[in-house]
Length: 313
Image (cartoon, rainbow, N blue to C red):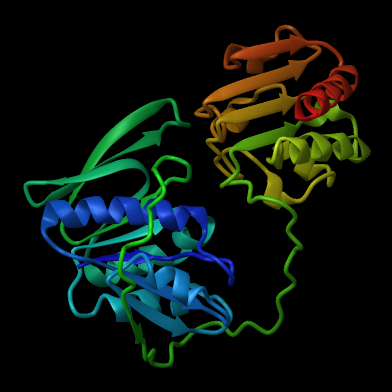
């Protein structure tokens, strides 16, 4: 069995889950087995959508997230034997899948770009050294593997929906969540966005990000920020792109007032097309940009917004 951890937002499966399903199906075909899914939640979950993608769907309601609970849920689904566990790569997956791999004595391959099975081993590629090189790695079965966002085609539903199996989860010694304040999210998720518009310190202040938001909305994308911007309190940490933030790989990445420090480049330099706007012609970002505009971002950005509006009209 290949087990896929199906991330969701309570209403629908996340894009990363559909990428993980594609990877899992390829491994299952190579290893001569079936794909099952596990849906963990703290309330509402998209059971009907999920069961349309797998032969068997394990479902468990676990209450507020903790790494211990989610690890227990995955292990309960995998207890009858599993060759591989495939999950979308995320900050959350990094906190509990290590526990799963340790319990199964399995190899852990994180943030993979592609994966395949050959000769009883699972191979994968992934970035290393701030995304400057690509590594080829392998692990013996069983293996726990995570899929880097925006690297894999999305899986289509099966012709016949699978069976649903409720998972009984024994009590897990864990930290008790007493209160959680959840930030309100607008628009598309940063890691799933096909277009990312990022503002850097060159924007000058938090008020300038209203136009960054406007351009992102017109393009159907998400807003990103550099670490300097987040540290200054202009934007929330959830929008930070870079080595200590999120890694994105959209079709279009627009960098506004971003100098291009190596730590930031590590989070976005694999974008398909990079457009940079900076008044400094020597800014490092231009070495990585497909298109560059040397100019004042406060003059260029309004012009970009107007140009996009005309195209949409």
